[in-house]
Length: 522
Ligand code: NA7
Image (tube, rainbow, N blue to C red):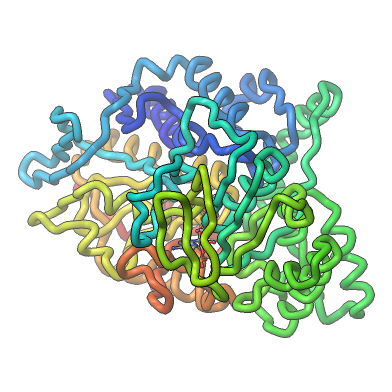
């Protein structure tokens, strides 16, 4: 999403720019995540690019929450529509980047042995592009098929008649489980911690509805720009001004609305006030109880370790009803942990499960993982991943001191991780493009964030984070990942800016207007 728009803006600027992509085609997230059920949680028409009126006129989103194959078609359409493929080099995975301070250039080395040198490098690496796997004894011995959802094969995967195990119940696991539950012979869900989840309420978009959306595009994007999360849903204050019955009436309404309404149009107090959060959590728990036939299974699906909305909320279609099917079993790993894998399946402390296919929906080394996977060496050979070992440190999520001319789109500590991605991506791309244009216009060839300005930004990121109840939760917002050393529980990483998109934009625009305050250009 970000690379495609970034290369367009750089091409429009008339600079000599090339886009390197590690995969053999474009699409990023929507190229890779081909698992059944993969789709937007954002309303499609708020997810698409807003930069071209013609594009908005031409494209018809067929579903309110469009699915992966259609999303990939869209990105290909955009690339072809604006003739962007000629700027793209596929199969070009950057393995290492070294800053040459004398030449003021980055030297890039590719996994396939090639190299490239550039004055500026703009990273569009994606916040959720470094998948992570658990490490259980005997995983290599399993004789069936097994893969991470990120690596779901391009070729159709047989599901009918097969015994399938899914490990992980985050946003991905919830999508895939709900989609395949009635298509497989047996489905075993290995759940360590349940997540809160609410209905997506997807629907198709007819030609007539799409025309109405097209007429409203200007308003839609203005609404997104004004909301903290980059959606049309707008949070409200006033939890304590309403009676408990009034609050329940609102939640009944929001639960039947689509997308993140229940989260992003809810009372803002639920994110800051434990009592408010407990009440809404209890409401959602009751909804789960109402949808799952077996009360014992329902209780296992209700999170006890975090309140509603305090980790990334997965949206679902018939997820809870899947557990009412006779072929679906929930295995609570807190009661019966996985002991090892065997050639035939998975052995827990209770039972051996025979499986034909194991799906790892075990998530990502979020936000900084993609950066750690490139060896980036800045001034004096300093390693970026070493510098960020305990958490990222950036200036407004775009620059990091000691790494001149490295400009991050939707980088760590920007709002990308905390909002509707594409809206923040467009903000980031436009800001970075303006900075490059400014540098070129003024004859500057070196751009570096000042250490002090960076410290101030990190302090602001921490302040915004600490105000919110999610600060204690174990999810990728706080950098938690049990499968990555240094990201375990209790090691909080300040990954994203949670001050809201409008405030973020105001801050970065003021910096630009003030001749890029906090950045040394020379
Ligand atoms: P998430 O949200 O990070 O979920 C990963 C899930 O995998 C989560 O339930 C984990 O449980 C589980 N997990 C991870 N390792 C293990 C092991 N070893 N054993 C059992 N279960 C495990 O990733 P998703 O891909 O679902 O979603 C990522 C984002 O992509 C999503 O937020 C959207 O923005 C798109 P845990 O919580 O660690 O107990």
